Image (cartoon, rainbow, N blue to C red; front, top):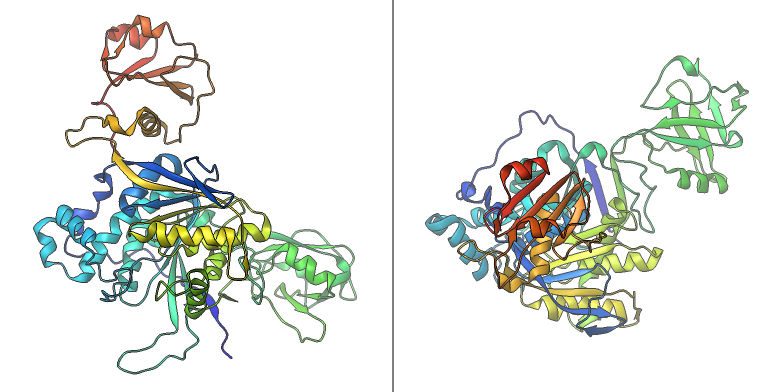
Amino acid sequence: MYTYCVYLIYAFADRSNMPVLNWIGKEKVVNHHLDVPYRVLEHTYGFKNGNESKQFSGSGNKIIHGDNLEALKALLPEYEGKVKCIYIDPPYNTGNENWVYNDNVNDPKIMKWLGQVVGKESEDLTRHDKWLCMMYPRLKLLHKLLADDGAIFISIDDNEQANLKLMMDEIFGGGNFVGQFYWMKTSTPPSLSKKMRRKLEPLLCYEKKINEFEYNGGFTEGGDMPLLNAGNEKRELNIPRSCVTFTFNGDYKSGKYHNVELVNDIKIKNGIPESDLKIIGEFKWTQDFLNKEIQEGTKIIVKSDKFSLRYIRTGERIKRPSNIISKTECNVGTNEDAKKIISEIFGSSQFDYPKVPSLIEYIIKFQCDENSIILDSFAGSGTTAHAVLNLNKQDGGNRKFILIEMEEYANSITAERVKRVIKGYSDKEGTGGSFDYYELGQPLFNDEGELNELVGVDKLREYIYYTETKEHLVKSKYIDNEYLLDKYNDTVYYFFYEQDSTTTLNYEFLSTIKTKAEQYIVYADNCLLSKEFMIKHHIIFKKIPRDITKF
């Protein structure tokens, strides 16, 4: 019998002289995310209580059909800096054209995009150049969406792993590289034939800001001890004196060893402390896990010469939990398990290389709390949503998922799987839950740079407010005229816009303003107020569409 594991191995290196990756077409895509047209999301249906309807589900869960580059940009007004965990399983660029998810970047949509963005040079690109051109702007937008305390996990294989690592170092910063998980994806032993069979598949992990990143202990049944903190922040452990034994080899107050220090001043008699022990350090155990161990009779031993911890469980010899985390593992299942799950849902396996939900559950639990937003922009069969729904059912959490899928099966496979998981399939009880399905809609600006009035006033208002505040517009809390967007940081924003008539910022419009603030920003077609008057009353006029920021 084989054990199916995920390994997390931390790699530390000098980041001062990071290598730079170059390829044909790079200069055309480095800032391409800024040129991607902003498109609105068009709501198609909501799925709630096991049924579809035109009404919004109100769940916050989204499945979006469309080019993931444009869809990621469409998410910025609501989600920039708010996504706690990103998991993506992009094409591995194996050269295989027969897989349902075209895996050599020769999809007609991608080829058309490369021709438009890279130009004639695209005709000379290798498949590796194409893959890098495709991934770079998408990773730039994912970086924007990730929260400061968030992390991104990327499944990949050896075809592009080295290139991806260098590209991620450039976009996310080499110092924000956490390390690599290795998913044991198959129970079949590896071979050394001409076509090597590999058991391990890497998952690269990067943080947005490494010093603020914490893990939440994502171990499933059969795993080892929960992680306290992988960012090496010091935490306090409290241990009742009845459970602690000192092996005394000198003055325990004489120094700090192994990043562990004593908090309280205690006396030791015959190797037993006379009060509870409080220590600070980077521990592999959480306080809750420690309390559980103590309740089950585990004894803690403190080696006072180096101030390291050991423990004795009933029937076991002395063991020492690591102070610095180097490796963790847990059972998550294999690709064979994933295909079996899809077969149970659809009657046959729709994908050759799906991920197993428990792998994504492991990642989510490792990184997220119960109210986090999880994003997957290469959604495929919808495994990430499956994992989120499973976890919410297990612990009553309120995690939200956002899936993006560009292929035509976004509704027939991706969304359909989520529906069946919610309702139940085969002999599996439904998880419950709901979501909303969207299509990628009209661009906000037309080819002449004018506002596209087909998107509707509400979408225009959301966009304007986001460009000004980087916040998502909610319904105004203030009594005012209909053109008020909202008040933010003591500035009030107005979008004085009419589709069929010209608007003018004048004294008559000012008379309708009721909200008091330090500053007023008003978008309109024209302005009849003098510069002196606007300066005196802290009014800023912005002309539609000239002064609308394009991001």
